[in-house]
Length: 407
Image 1 (cartoon, helix red, strand yellow):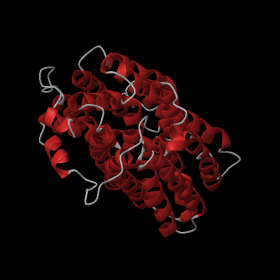
Image 2 (tube, rainbow, N blue to C red):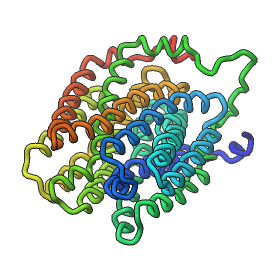
Image 3 (tube, one colour):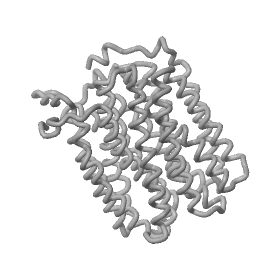
Image 4 (cartoon, rainbow, N blue to C red):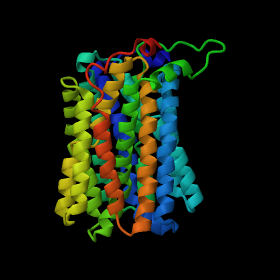
């Protein structure tokens, strides 16, 4: 590990590296749903089957995230990121070359799920959080998180521009080549101090610490809220192409709308981080989820047009990943930054359980009802629930928990 720490990049260079790594990890993942119509035709897979594959991917990703966080705290962030990037790249290649639904499931649901879980927010943001004091930590987390939105914009636009010349398989191979981003930058997120070697008999999971965190009511409520965030993100990113197609609009509307969400959220994520350093984070989360519910209801009720989807993309972009710096910042405020990778990893698992249902159940609801209205109504209702659960987390309740933060 010493090779990773001979050169110590400054804190803002760490933020830049974190943003680019998240641009790859989240950008690829959040634009793959745009390929669903082509994959369905090529592999003769029905929407519920494809939805289930993406749902399992989200679940695997979520299950891996806290384990990857614990491994990063034990063996170093850079090592875990490198392993995750290799799995991610292999998964993209296997998925791209799949000729059957079984091979597609192995590549998309399992390998990409494993790779995403080991290269995503908990690990990356924990490395950032440790470099900044509380007074500007949430801003740094917001700037790093905005990298995921930047990636969504870049990969969605790449897909839109390359679509006429590349099929879905070629697009995924092109995405696989960009894995070099993580391989080149992982060292910058290495810990400033060498992780301590595990002692004999020491367990990976500190169940006492995890159990203590799970008993904290504020932590429970943050988990519930992030479950809803996962439902929203998966529903929109996986099914945007289906919704646009159902409305009789050109496919480019879906990719352009997702790209617009990513572009605007570059500013939305930074703004959320800036606001989180100045105002109470859970109440900002209440506002974000309430606005999301309003936007989803507006999308359902208003006449569908290209302009409506673009307006929805611009407005949703201000809210898209803005929950990440606010939620991770609240977890760091509760328990300190030292164990942020594992404790935010558990919150991320809750997010991905929500994403499982947002991907799979939404596809099933479309098959049952024949339109997307039921899925959108449930998504809006969950947004109101998430807005409500953050209200009890008052400034007095959001206090550092010594027993947990001590590790």
